[in-house]
Image 1 (cartoon, helix red, strand yellow):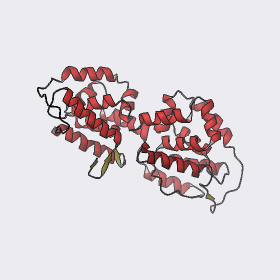
Image 2: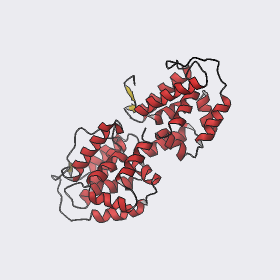
Image 3: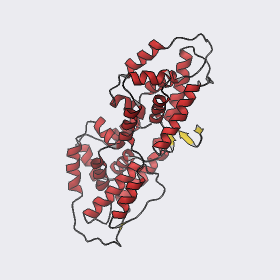
Length: 312
């Protein structure tokens, strides 16, 4: 589905299909904000679901509250072309607006959740706010998980960097992921390395402390402090003199990680690569890093499965 240049993710399409099913089961002749919220709860695995969970929402209680408010309709027809109410249409418009504000080129379940709250007058918004899910709280949690655009910060960091950076074309990186990569370059330079390794990227991800990668590690119960300690042993300082003419290379482990990331995106993991994709790419292509994570109870397939669970 495309609306005004914005891609609706497969998960959002699923949610909208669920919304029609919810409306039909309630014998309604329309899809309203209440059906969209019921569908988000039913989907249960996207970023929106993770946001609700992290904000302490009991989604089953919320669903019960919704069904206690909504009155059954009288329609006996089961239609898949039910029209959206004006409020539901507004939710979709606001979801696209939220995606633009976050500099995302797609609309995911997180944007749909923010659109529901921002609409403010529908049943969906009322039940969410009643449960303590305000727009500010939900947006802050989305940013904590996915990140947002900070182009000026990236530019400033690049100007301070004492060495030039080779670029890798063709991988669409989210702004948070670009910040992590920038830090990985810094780590390599600080240690006198002329190659950016998987260990540098993994350290940068953990130092960043937020984003999807860290959310996945938290969900898997990983000891991030222990991981950092072990990763630093993989990336010691080698004291090679760097000059302003030095170009940090993407050849070797990180180049292989970029290929793995590209493969993940093409397999439907998402339209842009975030911190979760970066770390997954490293785990797939840097055996020494993967071993550190394995010893801390985080396997590659565990990480991939949980990343896909929370990715909208």
